[in-house]
Length: 288
Image 1 (cartoon, one colour):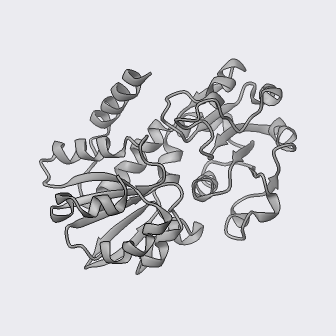
Image 2: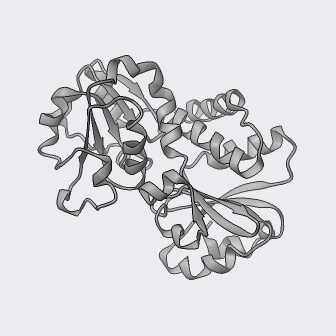
Image 3: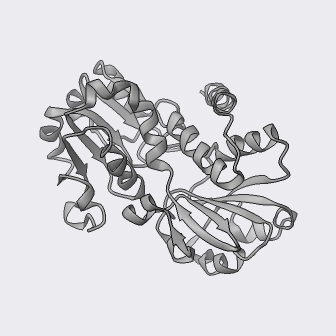
């Protein structure tokens, strides 16, 4: 549902969390956070709301709703909500992107948990990717969080791949070492141990899309290939990587771990990670 429709429901009169994005129909966040809330017997529900550009004037008033306990943000709204924040956490301040709003004494504070979630499944591969290069497809809010997180993983060079390298903003440039276009990235991949897709290419319903064209897939060979997309469980990019004997990681672990930080910020309670991951795996595998 969109925001106008959501405002007409009874949901807004009871304690709730909201995810804003466009699209949001693919999101597993409602399943994840509602499961965690039930685990603790909390009287709160989480809803996904597709926000249209013409609904943005409604946001300011909506954020004043006392029953709204937290806001989650996904593509393309990780910048837009900064204007509503009285303060920013250190990561969100550095990368100027937020994925969660937390209410503190009736004021909203913005945080970014994407980088934390992204880094967790990579820790077991630190000996492989350490000292090497990382290639990152995309230059948006998720790519910023990834580049920031890679600072702690001993990556020698971080290279952004953009369709418009000259348009990559001043915020992301201090976090990376180079920007290349989609024709140049194969040369950057030679020393890369890690290749990350931070674009929505391959997300449902556009399953055939990938940041890598068929003539370039050999450059994925023997890498750690990581797609932030978790639905589908195996994107076309990951299928390409798998065909090249690469280790593949989808975005499910990132989703769970970034969500764990969000849930703790909202509720002060530890996320039941094993329970949540099992629930999400069952849903994804059932769909596939």
